[in-house]
Image (tube, rainbow, N blue to C red):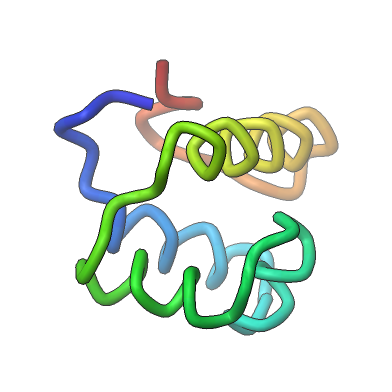
Length: 75
């Protein structure tokens, strides 16, 4: 993903569009609830692995027509 991407807003937007709790998203990505909470609150940025997992998850949801990101899937 692009480094200047607003991750807190992006994570929150994805969760809201998919009606997922932080725990649900964490489970889907294979990370802890605390990780998603920190991403969403801007305390930390995702690691390279976290970014890759989030990208793949978003891409899959977009392909299924369940997610619409106005800026598209980040690089």
